[in-house]
Image (cartoon, rainbow, N blue to C red):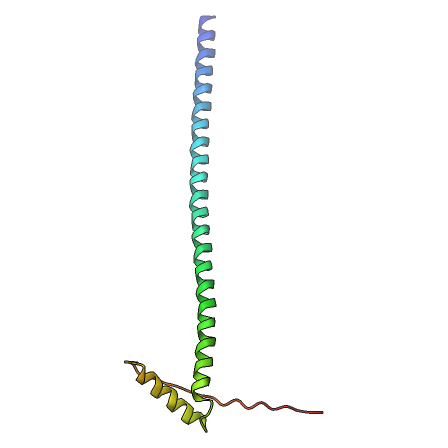
Length: 116
């Protein structure tokens, strides 16, 4: 009888130890998952912030481009040809201190309206 009780106690202790070990493994797995989730949340936040900064830059560049085009057109609107307009814009760039090669292409757009 003592042998049976001893075996039952041993089995119970082993069962409790296995459950504790399983509990620790589950806890470790949950902590790992939480850590992974935190990493992905941080990466998602970083991505969203970078995307927001990019959108701001794109908006600012678009506004800058519009302003530059308006100024360029104002400088050359009285020129007789696209070549003369390009030459004038190039001269303006050099006068304003450009230290690099300056290339300017001016394209004349003709609007054609068709009537039926």
